[in-house]
Amino acid sequence: MIEGIKLIGSIVGLITGLFVFVDRLLRGRPVASLTISEGAGRKLVCIRVSNISPYDIAIIDMKVKPPAYFLTESLAVRRLIEGAVGYKPSFMLKPGKEKEVILAPTFAHGVPNELTPQRVTIWIFWRHGHTTWLPQVPLWVSTDTTTIRQFGLEQP
Image (tube, rainbow, N blue to C red; front, side, top):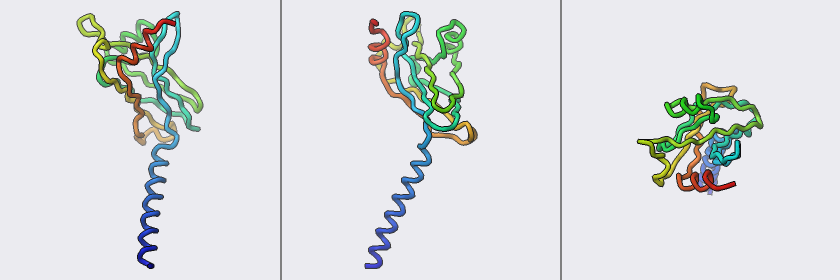
């Protein structure tokens, strides 16, 4: 009987420890989602990053796999050229704030790579503002080119 109680206590302790570890690891994570922004009379497909934690966060890198799109902070010519040659947005977000980064298509031989139906994953690498040295589990947004084109090309 005593051995049964020890076994149950050990299992409950292990489960509690795992829960606390995962909670600490994932608490204060920003939220990322696919969204549509309307500006200058057209729809833009964007990735919105929201900081729901009480601390500043640093977005240190953003990657699109496979590279059917690139990310840009605006549609200014300079930003589009920077994004097309590989510049990746990085910025800080205050608590409770959010920022949208535009998904722009890449081209090969004058044809947009988004025409080929494929899965697209946007990886967002971030750090807490008070522990920028400590790596965090990256955020990701998973979608496909068909969905992006459906909502991005839809008439207002």
